[in-house]
Image 1 (cartoon, rainbow, N blue to C red):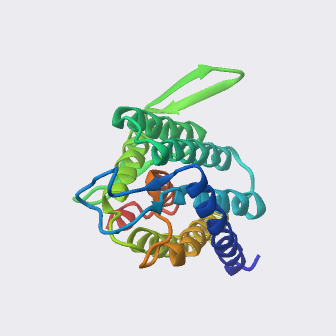
Image 2: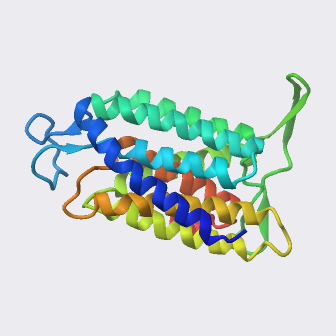
Amino acid sequence: MNLLLPFLITLLLTGSITPLVIRLAIKYNLVDNPRTRYHPAHTHKGVIPRAGGLAIGIGFIIAVLLFVPITKITIGILIGCVILVIVGLFDDRRDVNPYVRLATNAIAALVVVFAGVGIPYITNPLGGVLHLDTLRVTFQFFGPHSIVVWSDVFAFLWIMWTMNIIGWSAGVDGQMPGFVSISALVLGLLALRFTVSDPSQQSVTILAFIVSGAFFGFLPWNFFPQRIMPGYGGKTLAGFLLAILGILSYGKVGTAL
């Protein structure tokens, strides 16, 4: 498969869906009005739609269904994305309680962790690696299942941390979709290095290019002067997807940097 094709298709999908989402956001009052919703970080004037997460999410999900093999992990990622986009839309309409947002973020993270996204080891700064996949708990639930305790705990904490860091990093027009698109592209290239020894990494590369295309397609509409904001859904979706790519591409520290 031409690896550039998923990037271009996702870019076009998100770019063409965003104007429709802008009209939908205005119609249903999913907007940011500095006069009625004061925030010290506001840099814009006037009423700006906030539902960018919906456009990014739709473009991403369609592209994944077109280009990425459907596995337990893929399904887990898609379910997590849907949860975050829905909560983001509620937050765009009326600010959701922070504890509710934290809880739904945790649910989205747990979904992908239970789907199989885990951190089997971390690099030891003193040399070698620290294995996190030694402690397993096995149980029966429509068949045998096992939880890799430390691997899953670290993956959960990593995803939650990255979602919050990306959320705090969103600021001026075009900032968040710009650096997320670049980061995802770099992680895709990093995964591509391992395709010789691990052919499954090609799917990770495709997934990373899709993430990059989704946010790059959104960028022209968010670039100064922005016509739509990513909203809470867009920010958490960005952190969620970068965190997963960091795990799957073995680029966790690179993602953080």
